[in-house]
Amino acid sequence: MEMMDFSDTGNLNESLSESIVPPILQGSFGIFGNLLALILLFCYSKSHKWGAFYKYVFALAITDLCGLLFHYPVAVTRYASNFEFDFPEKFCYFDVFLFSFSFLSSAMIVCAMSCDRLFAVRYPITYRRGNHKTKRVLLAVWIFSAIIASFPLLGFGSAKMYYPGTWCFINFASQRCLDRINTYVYSSLCLLILLITVIANTAVIYSICKYDKQDCIISNDFERRRRKNDETYIVTLMLSIVIVFSVCWIPLVVGT
Image (tube, rainbow, N blue to C red; front, side, top):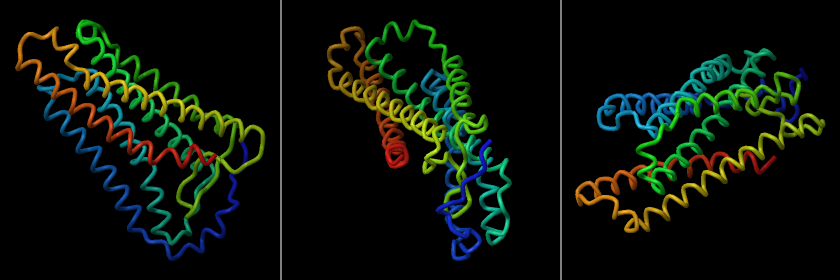
């Protein structure tokens, strides 16, 4: 395991002007938002009946919530100690695993949601009759993300503490061969997932715009309108999630 790289962070104990308010607000909003999503999912479970899409939303909220709960207490402790509390090296590597796993698995879940919607819109009859195996997909996503996120723990890459010294992530700045390979693997994988997600959502929107071609399979006008409204609502939610992910991810993965 490589030692942590503290270059470019300066003297972290000099960051006395950093306010504790932003991380508390950021963590609180994130935790509250995910808890609210989980509460709404359970409150309206009778209407959505835990379809594949809503299972993905549940998994996405749980994944993000766990990442926040593990990271923010330690980060806030660092702020509260006036930056005198130092991260143990092992926790810094755990932080790298936590962020890498959370980012990657969340992106893959969003991608799976997009592909699920595409299949539901393009092949509605087959989709209703099929066994979607959502739990297996989620298990595969979490296992794969855990393997990729474990690379720095296995020496295939290293950790770097970033300003203001409250979080650690993959060492993108290192020129060491294994660090560069780990960086390119992670970044390329993230961009590929994002590309698939955008393509899938674009195809879903195109299919909904051409919805009249599929209306012949539904003779009831009320059922047709209800289904179209449901799909429009889900696609709107998906687009919002994809836009947020894109804004947060593109500067990180492209900058590497």
